[in-house]
Image 1 (cartoon, protein in one colour):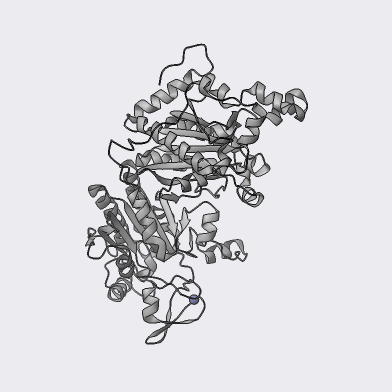
Image 2 (cartoon, rainbow, N blue to C red):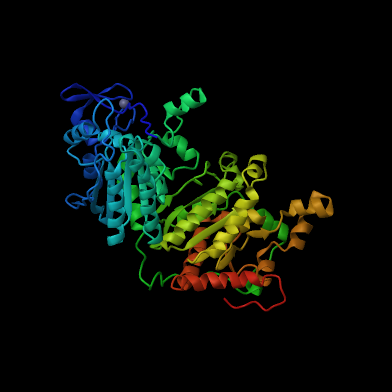
Length: 563
Ligand SMILES: [Zn+2]
């Protein structure tokens, strides 16, 4: 289990006032290196910080109150290898001045209350024994007691061999302390620093709501040497680094040390909901009577819905000028670029924003898979929806996709199930859900993000069971019949509103959203704000019940039940 990768982060002292960077070898003036929080000004390598240094850099000055973990067994097996375990413990204590590898402090980060548990790699490689487990559990209990977010900073080689099964069990013990915070709806954040391996990676570290890592920090279950010995192959460059983990859906973000306080502040700020009298000045732009809509030929609407100048999900969030912390990854091996999501602030109200993401240029579209999500995209969406439910924040989705990605890999990874899971989870949320179809509402891939208490559609957006071209090719046996198919399918706002498929239509600037994206975004924001103003004070269980009741009667002869 214990698998300490070769430590290369040590900075070797050259002369008293100078240090040489272990990344590039450059000499850095010690005081400057310290001012830069041990980040090399030349190559950006993040040197290791002690727990003390980390706390100093994160907490507001003078705000920290140490939290003492309870007593733990010291040497339950009377373990002795080349050296008695007690000697190793004594050496670690005198080297670090710490009783175990974790320090727990309650304090504030930029004015926001938080409990911090910080690991120190100098203490027996940050390995987890009973005392370290006790410290993590104590931190979680302190967060619970004061209803504060928990932030853990990890640095560890894994479970500590010298305590045998006592060490092993700390994985389950700490994981279940995290579960209690989930049940209490308290935000948990992990900062992964180099290295984080074994039992610490496979327990509390990776169970946090938000997992951030420092650049190049390595994390994994098995250490690289163990893997190489097992598979008898050389590992690829960058394997298990933060950047690799981000690409593989295992992290929310890679954050340089200097930017961490800002990111933490944004995340911690999102915990505070505004007063009941929220955004009273916003007027509702939504049209609810079909006869008030100006009609245009449906093929023209299809063209407008697909116009590359329309604002994308990220454009909307940016235009709203709100705080937005993007959260990435499905935690199962991938991060889909066609779905974006994260915690945002809408007129001061924290919301979980999730949307399909297209682009304006071919290059952007290629990078975003043309807004066609893979199963990882839907699994990321589900993860974020569950997080929203935990934190009691509303879910807002912006829908704009030609459809879910049709492809070999998507099928292999369970596209059908991933979409179905979205449909079920979205319907089951006990927080308000508002969806806006902002462009193309293409089939199941769109509906997967559109099971809502209020389903709105932009004036020139479309919503359809299949693309008009696809329908024409199958039923008319000619792609040229697409306009006829679009009309027959009733993909336009007027038909969708008349049929009660959508609850309202968000007006667009004259000529379409692409003509004035800023105004288009403002209208979408106002529509969402007004829908949430109505929903946010409602009881969660009642919301879910109403959402399901509404779904129950779609397409039957029963009268629609008022929601
Ligand atoms: Zn360097």
